Image 1 (cartoon, rainbow, N blue to C red):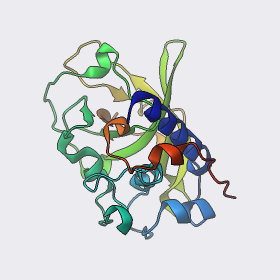
Image 2: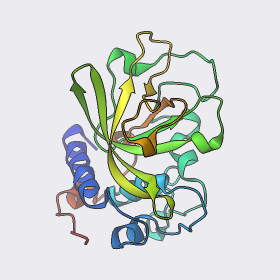
Image 3: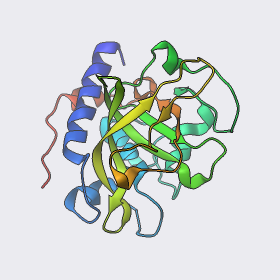
Image 4: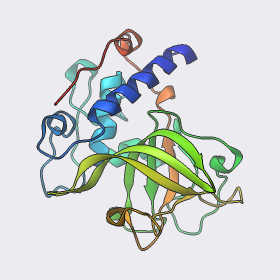
Length: 229
């Protein structure tokens, strides 16, 4: 994919998120996004990410956790976040270590950013697996002294647990040092349902612009996205 083609595909990602970026488990949208999910099997956060990659035409079997024999894709239960991160393997852009206290160069500090459709992985370094979370980046906004990331996120509070999807505004705490992590400001999160006792680090993001796509992905991206009610 060249830059112009990838721009069209990223625009499609935005249109897909406009349609599928908010749902409640059990509604028509969730039935398309959360294929294979069962209540009690954790959160749905990774399902929106993999649904998006599949709909955009990604064919990388190591990354996309979805069932599609035409692309050789197979879904493996509880493998959503692992495939997105893959230990930081390129094209995952690593900003922080998952281990506590490990210093590394943080590209966010020097201005590198995810783009529309990229998939962000956050985690409490050295913490429990339950602190893992992934979401889709939409855009960044500077609002006064605050740095805001607009995101589309599944795994959000709902009637059946952490199962729904919502558009979110995430406040970002940027480090002044290039060897320290960037955190989400979750301790002071205005939405009490998202508030946490500690902030999670932005481990990095999967750059969807560097993944492998099916031949028709660019042409498909120019077609309208269906409406679902």
